[in-house]
Amino acid sequence: MPLRYEQIMKILQECGFVFDHQTWSHKRYKKWGDWVTVWFHKEFPPKTAKSMLQSIADSIGVEVKDLTKKYGIKL
Image 1 (cartoon, helix red, strand yellow):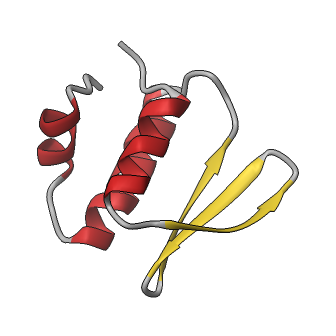
Image 2: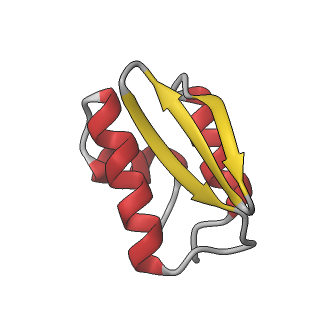
């Protein structure tokens, strides 16, 4: 099951990221000095999903596998 836009938004919100700004269909969310760019799309390709999850995991200090397990995401 691919990662959906709603799921990534839920993860960002629960991890404490806040909206910073938007350029076209790309939204940037920040937490401390880190940021994640999310483009508005129904489903993300596996490489894009993994990259976004990696950025989030690095920002909050956990492993990607922990995020995928917690939210039931299969990459």
